[in-house]
Image (cartoon, rainbow, N blue to C red):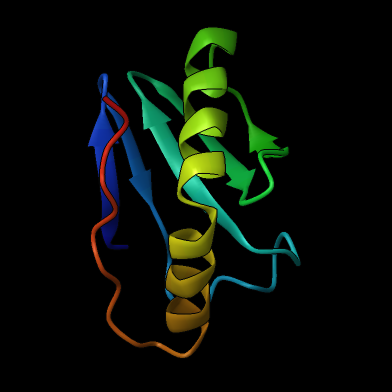
Length: 88
């Protein structure tokens, strides 16, 4: 599961060929002991994460929406993923 970005102790990853469980483009977030799946549109799909960190992740996703969709398209084709700039 490649790491796409890391900021404020939040790790963003995307699995290869991960389109069967949530049925929409998404990425995985880890913050401390919290884990969640978040849609590229910012919707919390599974798991939990503190509200403050979810808002940071959602803001990052809005800024990098095009890059996230490109990463998703590559991931479902088992192609390499590029790193995405962290939130600053």
